[in-house]
Length: 244
Image (cartoon, rainbow, N blue to C red):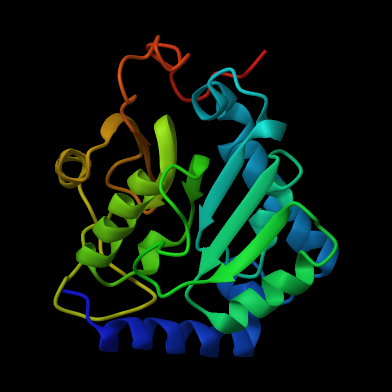
């Protein structure tokens, strides 16, 4: 489905309604009634699984406390709060104003984390080459438009510094693109994502679990000149390698 102002409005409205009904459940559906302790612990667990075991690719020899990172689809701030314990500054964006209100409350005393409402299709609030790392998890799988997702990927390339990583997850199971479902979204094959990387100017260096709901991609923005000129390693380690 192609994107339009009407589609973006539907996405915003649907997620606002979900946030009002039960924000924490729609962020993490394994429980309907989360305590604060359980909810935030699940965010810490997610960061251990997807960030801390991949620091060579993410940091590329940079101290994470000196890095500014972007989280697409921050929801109620569950993962954002945990990311702020790792990185120097975290900016989260979400289309839902209701979700952002909840994230801002969660992050009220977290000085290095900020939640922003965006329009659901671009990152116009940020300048070029602002971020050292971008991350998105359990977000794109809900978007019912390939064009919206690809525009986000293109925008991430714009706001990333040269040589840096966008690590993200999409739906890898087949989907019916004729529907407009802001929960089930659209699916992608490995070939789909390789072609998207080429169109958006990324190098798709790794992928994991293609064909499943949790299809992970490692898209690297090419260095401005050469890897050595930018002080970056020629080939970051494969996923799962740890820093240090």
